[in-house]
Length: 393
Image (spheres, rainbow, N blue to C red):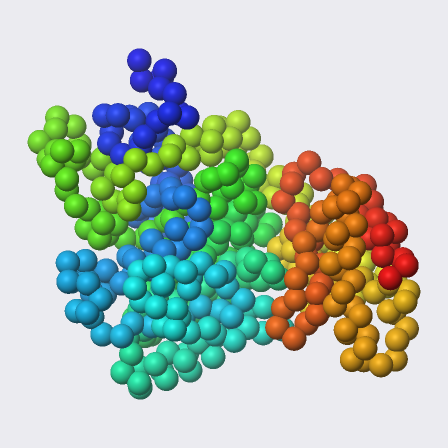
């Protein structure tokens, strides 16, 4: 009867109510840990409701690892903790710090270089500074695939610093983690095997239906001791099977959605080779876009060099803005271009590309390719469409 379980109705917290899904989760997480590069796939992990929650789990574990008493006694029992992340990192790091009672002011943003990568020397400087003030650095979140530029922080250098100062190293690979599936691109995550934890969202680059986000942890048993409450009405300790299969007590939720089923099914169907081909194709399309517009009249790249992920960031300068001499006036006008073109795109319903400012840079387009059905013709169409919709601006 177990195979007749309805995955849409199912709860995932004990082996006896969801034996098939508990085992699918077990084998898939192990496989993901092997791909990260942890010895024999050892460690732990959980599927959570999105990358923000996975990042929060990592922060929770890092705090517990350093100060186990915080679980019973709360934040008043520990010194002032500080976390570090890049200024280009996802807002979920600060959100997690707020939720865990650490506070957003305790998250120190480290400078990124012009390509959007965290600068290791600045990280080290800020760690030393925090220690001198009497704070306790407990968590560094490196980003593999930043939201805007698609940048990969230098994980090896960050791992060296974390090791030297004895700080938990987390890799937020929600967006870029899937590049581990590609032999051609996985070098961008060199050093990830030295991290204590990693967030990896198959629902992004691997195109698994939402939601499917995993937190992977190098140390086995830590999630259990950090989160378990041993509720006697659910996790009885005298059952007839191996209790390590009761994964519910290491989660913050009680009943969990069966996110694993979609990933397992797709992996069985496509295979690792299929995922790899899909990821390589998306990166090839973004490189094609970059090569087409980098020297094209009216286009300007936001940062130099080939993008590392599928985020292609550029300005389109319409003829009316292109030849303006006054720099200030030019930037003021350019800032308004992307929002107008985007609005027209939505009206015509032909394409959709997001835009945003970043630091001192005015609004630019950020084309992100993650749909494996996209083609080279689609990219050609996109370029012509931007020009058509913006020619009169």
